[in-house]
Length: 147
Image (cartoon, rainbow, N blue to C red; front, side):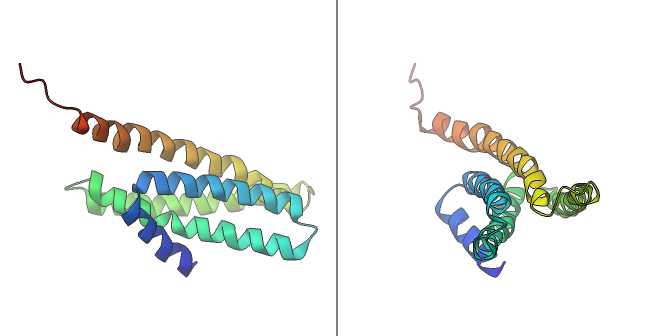
């Protein structure tokens, strides 16, 4: 968890935060999928769980940086909204994981249920990165018409 927070911030300083956050969401989705398939091998399941936890906490720093960068004048409201979103994600994840358990699917299915949620986060962050971080940079790099 600590390593995720620290490295998420360092990666955001080196690369664009939207790119970092989207890639971490994708890696987290892959880790959840691998937990599902390797749950019968405890050592591998623990490794993938650590990767998943790393990604979960590494996404926080880029998102906070994006909040400060893209919400001037509304950072307090944005910070509250981010906290609410994390809490909502925790609640939905617990509820959906509980559904798998209550339907007697087995514990590995709790990870599988998280994959679409992580992929949805990846899609949203990748869209943001493409339309808010890349396109403005390309437009700024183009030479202005002198006529």
